Amino acid sequence: MVLKFVLCDEASKDIITIKGELYKYLIKVRRHKLDDEVDLRAKDNLSMLYKYKISSLDAKSLELTLVSSQMLEVKSKNYLHVAWCVIDVKSIEKVLPMLNELGVSRVSFVYCDRSQRNIKLDFVRFERILIASMQQCGRSDMMELDEYKNIKEFLHEFSDVVVFDFCKNPLAFDADFKRVLIGCEGGFSQNEREMLLSQKSFMLDTPMVLRSESAVVAISSKMLL
Image (tube, helix red, strand yellow):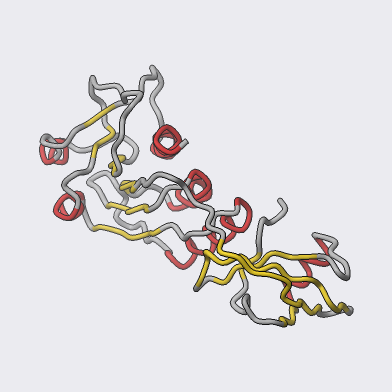
């Protein structure tokens, strides 16, 4: 897939020398040539978009010269914080780019009673996945990621969360919540359901049973698109 922009720590400088993997991508994959323009963003200032021209090129490196810069934010108009009970890491990694493209603002991974306790979350790897997704979809703000040791701890901080669960309340067409808790495979335990009795809850109007990763994408899509 063609990148909408390239993340580069040196973006904003008047002249940048590119070598290594980024050079290979721009020249071997994208087939850029002399005088072509390339869009860059810097991780510490993602809202700025810098346009560069390839001003020199040889067999191992290229030189970029700054042409213009502008404040250009590309992000969702709405805010959604997803509290997602921890599931298999490989499944999380497959879904993260989708949530990023949809515009989810924050994902909190919550260990629930049915989460496998031996699962360790690699946030450094998650960030690399998000950066690759941002460059592909054009998003200019970094999704927030964090974790909570259990549902009780999350509820203590976010008492306004709405719960996706097996119930008789289909998600309303005009639903307007900012924070949602989604369980892992098998849903919530009895103890957790008792803990969540005072929270608003909803279901999706489908006769099929959704996997946790399908539910998180479906709910995010309904709320953000």
